[in-house]
Image 1 (cartoon, one colour):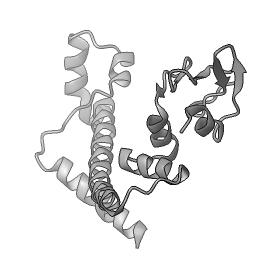
Image 2 (cartoon, helix red, strand yellow):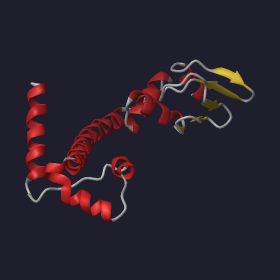
Image 3 (cartoon, rainbow, N blue to C red):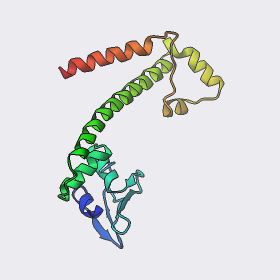
Image 4 (tube, rainbow, N blue to C red):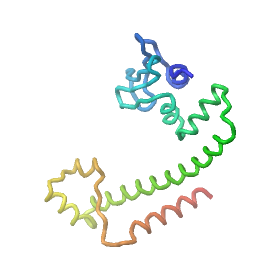
Length: 171
């Protein structure tokens, strides 16, 4: 399967020398910075840095895991992978769901602790410490530095509340 053919279904490509160029599908741009090499079977965006092979592109574009991308491309090429691959994909999908949930929890906690640091009612001691160490607002915000209040169950309560809320939305 040719990478130019597959990416051409997502991006309008124009031949330029040995490569093809177009607007990057991974960020907004007005001038083409997305390059696809037919020789190397790779793509690269000089604007956002995205790059990889045909599998990487499908994973990023469709939100697929690697096995799902393989299955997707095999189907496009009329290649039968057999039943064992599909079972592995279902197992991978369950693990990916758990992993996604963990990352969402970590993202929520990162935002929560950063909020606590920036809120003078909670984060004053942490902010004072960071200022003494030379941290600027830019660094604190860029790295989402946070502050944990003196309560061991804060994170647990927040995550449990978030899970109950998510379950209510699903039902």
